[in-house]
Structure formats: C-alpha cells, structure tokens
Image 1 (cartoon, rainbow, N blue to C red):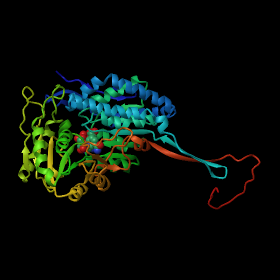
Image 2: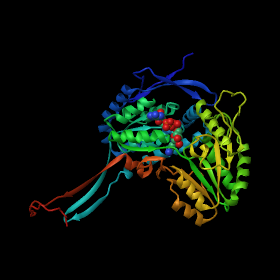
Image 3: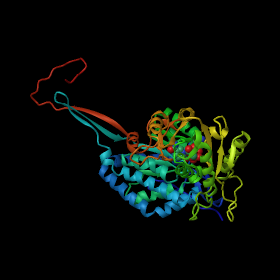
Length: 500
Ligand code: NAD
C-alpha cells in the first residue's frame, strides 16, 4: 500500500509541492516507515515567501493587541490539542509521552510570552533632549522571517521562533526537519483556526534545496536556525552573505562538574535524567561529567546502578523511561563512537549496544552506555554523540574542571553540583558557556529569558525568545522631534547640532 504524502502549508492551506521529491518518515519505535513528506523545491519556497510577503503589510498594521489575541487563542488551541501533538512528537521522534508533554509545555510558554507583545514592543522616550526637542524609539517588524529547525524537538524548537516573530508583526516561513514535519503542519492549521490571516505563517518541509531557497531569497529578511554546528555555520555564512540577519544555534557538548562536597545521590539522579532523557538527543543533554577528586569512584558506581534500571522501549508505552534513536543510521553512528571509545582505552562501565526489545526488534533502540576515565583526546570526548552515552572525565580540582570546559569548542550548557557557594560563584563567573545550572542539570531558561549558547554553539549575536528574541525580530527606529511655535525665532547653522 502506498504511504500518504504530507503537503506543504502555504497561504493558509495545504498545498501539494510543485515537484515530486518526497522522503520517508519513520516511527523509530517500530523502525517502520509510516508516511512520506513532500520535499519543497525552490519554486515551492518562492510561493511560500510570496504569500508571506503579500501578508506582511496587513499583519504589520494589525495592532499588537489584536495580534496578541490571536496568539492567546492559538495557545488555547495548542492546549486543547495537546494529546494529538504529544502523539505526533512521540510517533515521529520516539520521545516518551512525558518528555514530549514537557517539551510541548515549554513551547506553549513561548506563545504565552509572545502574547505579551504589546508590552514588549514599547519603545523609550526622553523629553527635552534639547530645548523643545524630544526623542523616542520604536520597534518595528522586519518583514518575512524564516526558521529552520532540527529533528529533536518537533514542537518546541519551532515554537522558540515563529510565535515571537509573528507577534512582533513579521510573517514567517518555517522549514521543519524532514524527519518530523507533521507537528509543524498541525500547528499551522491550529494557528489559522485561531484567526491568523492566510500567508502569515507558512510551512515548507524539505531538505537542503528548501533551505538554500530561503537563505538566498531577496525577500527573506532574517533567518533563525537550530541544528548541528557544521550546518549552523553554513546557514550563518550563506544567509549573512545574502544580507540577512541570522541567529544560528548549533550543537553542544555539555559538561557537568561534580565537586566532592556534592550530595552524590541527588547528583546521580539529576545526571541520569539529563544524560539519558530523550535518548540523549537533546542539545541540553549532559553528555560529559567532570568528576573532581574523591567524587569520581562513588559517583560512577551510582550512575551505573541507576543506568541499569532505565527501562528502554517505545515512547508511547506508559512505563518507558527512554525511547529509541531517530534513525537506523544515527544509531549506527552512535554505536561506532562507543566502539571507538573502547578501542581508545576508555573504561566502558555499562554497554548499551546490542539491546533488543521483544516484539520491537526492528526499532532503533540502544541501551544506556557509560564510560569512565575518558580523556579529552578521545573521539567520544571530541564528538557530539547525540545518543544515550554518558562519559566521565576525572579532574583534580575546580581549576582543572573549568579549564577542560573552557577549552572545549562548544559552549551551550553546563552545570556544577556542589554544596559550596564559593565554588558555585566561581564557576558561574569563569565558565565560558551560555547557559549554566547550579545543582540543576539542564539549565533551560524560561520563555521570558533567552535561550542560546556561546562559541561553536551559536553563530550570530542574539539568542532565541525572551527580549533577545524580540530584538532579533524587530529593528529599532529613533525619532527626534521638535514642534516650534509659529512665532518662534530660527536661525541657520552649519555646525553639528547639539540641541542644548
Ligand atoms: P541538522 O543540522 O542535521 O539539521 C537541522 C536542519 O537543517 C534540518 O531542518 C535539516 O533539514 C537542515 N539541514 C541539514 N543539513 C543541511 C545542509 N547541508 N544544508 C542546509 N540545511 C541542512 O540537525 P539535526 O540532526 O536535525 O538536529 C540535531 C542537532 O541539532 C544536534 O547537533 C543538536 O545539538 C542541535 N540542536 C541544537 C539546539 C540548540 O539550542 N543549540 C537545539 C536542538 C538541537
């Protein structure tokens, strides 16, 4: 039987691609293809951008208050349809039900934040910057904005972008990951039902061809990207060369430092969730532990005991703790990295390879793996594994731990576990990473703070959502005004006005 093919969403309706390229979408829990997605071509992208461009003047001139009301209604519909969105996330990505629900909630919070846009768009005003002269600033939308998103958060990562962009008065073309496009298409339907005018939000599932169409299109003003570092760099360079504003969030290698004074049971519980949650396919996963001094041996033992108890299985089954990986080739890659760790001499404390789930033998499962005594020269340290593999390095003191992290090219997230305020403060101050947890393993900021890393985890200046998101999706205009009385005296001057 031929599989259903997902359409594109352009100008407020589902539309077939003008081309014929498609790709299979798998259910990672069964390893079976469940449907196909159209892969948008350049012509499809041009149609989507044309629809967004045509919708821009009307949406820009819709008052922020009215835009906010559409967002509020969208949030209500997202909540009402949460079961469906959680199912789509779990079905195409493999996440457990509770993890999919949590990431949906974090995404909905961005809609909630963006619903406050009348307040967020307020400019500044200063009276009497000169005699009888006032100055004020405005935040105005950019025009058509584009978003390109990864497979690992089918709902949450698109929601980091388009609600804020649209609330600010822009129109948007989203290119979701071709591995998980269904949730984005469903969100487009719900947004329309909420009252969003046609053309304001468009979705073009696709691959590099669609991405390149967006990066080079003269009417796209800004590009937001979340994905791996090599692609982030390519997006940043290409879009910037075509005159666009860019924020490109890349990959990660997040370290947790565990000090000998930490509560090791509390720490091990926290690290297990952060390392193996979502099968390690999180940009904020803790994939590396730096155990300081005497913390090392007891911590590794506690981690192994807890990893042994993780139940791996289909994400939609109630008692599953950890689901499968996204594709068979990705599982193959992670397994090869585990092989390399063994051959390079790291100590494999727990081996997740070769796991078979009865009745689901074709699913893309891999059990939790744990390495100890890893060094910074090994492949398993240098690569972003993006799978259920936690590695432990040893350090003699906090200085050495900080040095290891600051020498790593990535700078997305990090954490420290300690009972010492002095250590925590020192770590917070000296660490060269964008998001820091103190006794919190996944320091994911709330919607009203921004989210983003440093170094090779971000190309561009501004992070997503929070006020940085508002600044990314607006440009400021400064207006200086004087209203001279009819009878007021004036004179000509060619010198720099000082307004005093
Ligand atoms: P990816 O870079 O392979 O793909 C991301 C997007 O780029 C997809 O939409 C994909 O279709 C497109 N793409 C892929 N190759 C391309 C190319 N050569 N040219 C143009 N476009 C291309 O990433 P992924 O595998 O979907 O997601 C996992 C990665 O995303 C990990 O590295 C993870 O750390 C990262 N990630 C980062 C964050 C963050 O906030 N920094 C959040 C989530 C995921």
